[in-house]
Image (cartoon, rainbow, N blue to C red; front, side, top):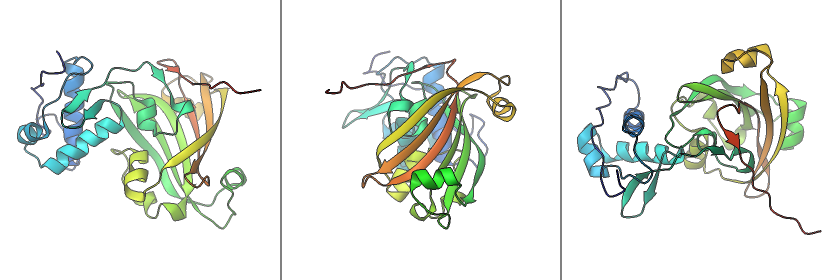
Amino acid sequence: MTASQPVSGAASPEAAGHPARTPLWFRVKSSLTALILDHGLEPNARLPSEAELCQQFQVSRTVVREALSQLVNEGVIYRLQGKGAFVRARRDDQDFVSTAVGFSGELSDKNRIVSRRILRQAMDQPGPRVRRYLKIDESEPVVSIDRVMMVDGHPRAIVRWKMVASLVPGLESLGLETRSLYDTLSRQYGIHFARADRWIESVALADEDARLLGVEAGRPALRVESVANDERDVPIEYYVALYLTDRSRLHVSVRSARI
């Protein structure tokens, strides 16, 4: 299939078996992702227009645009102004250790389904390590979100994430199972990251972490500790991630330094 040929044949969200309580945009997004995978669409194949998708799924343009925005954020498709939405090429290398983008984009191989399992989401008092990296005192709470990130239903990483609570009021109670955390930070709270420092080491998975990732205890994994700064160069985000690398490679770009 070429980029000039629109695709068709997607099942309606209801026919795809989504519960009625699932947000409409998520049901459309899932149906489109399944369409891309099931049809084996080639890179740069064009998707139906927004109007065609509205008619096909019997939903509003707002719902379709949200579904497409999420697919763009997860790296499944891309958009060209005035031309429509197209399938992205599959990516074998993972760039999350060298970028400050969200984990949906970081973990999603092109044309893969990224999902999240929320383990814990609450307000916390920060421990000494978090206080030191975020430069806050013990009286300033943080929002903690622990997640298992999955690609095509297979656990890929555990992320234990924290952010200064005053920057994200109400985040501890938002539903994040079907939504990218970083997309939410950007669109709902206006938060953008300027840079991040990350420390990477190889570890053996403890029993509980191995169980969450569906592998045996002691399996090697990468432990990534990260501190991200906002556009004022103020540290606002801290996380520790355990990442399985048996299904993909990690990519880091290194610029030459002047001596």
